[in-house]
Length: 234
Image 1: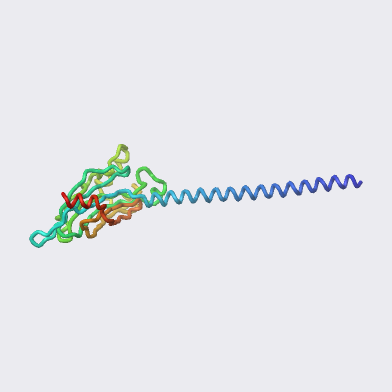
Image 2: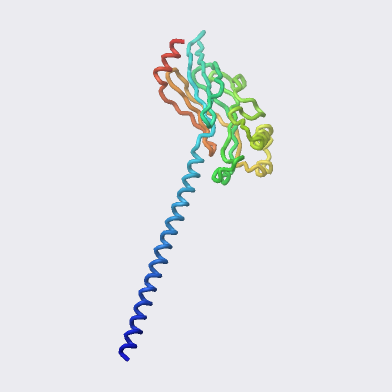
């Protein structure tokens, strides 16, 4: 009788210990799974943040000459763009009146889900530079930068699908602007004209950037002394 009771007690204790082990195992692995899911979610959010903050179009502007002629300041701007891979496109030169340069642009912004998903066609906002002019000039007297109705050179790639999609957007920019259904069918969140402007003076390099979410900015930093000396000695 006692021996049978001891066996029963031993079995009970083993079952209790086993259950405790199973409970610990379940909670331990459940916690690990939750941590893994949170880490994956954080990685996804970080990737989305990175895509939103990635510069889609970058142009650098230098002032190579600035002088007053017959009471009018003339500023010579050297405009250089770089592709996403860092390749430099042919430089262009513009001479404006005054030292305040205005860059007019057309910007197309796609819906957030396309940016978040890194969609190959609509994963980033795109911009066309319309013209540049000085504060002492009328916009209509400005100098064209990109050719209206065509894909800007910086966006031209080897993928014909992307080229055809973007060509359609630029060819009918203002039609899309006034056609809600056409914008919806292309996944466009918004498109509009935008002006970026600031003072441009010798001894500085100015960078215009467009981020994936459509934010355009101009930033200034001192010009490297070596390049500054080279410009002065031209």
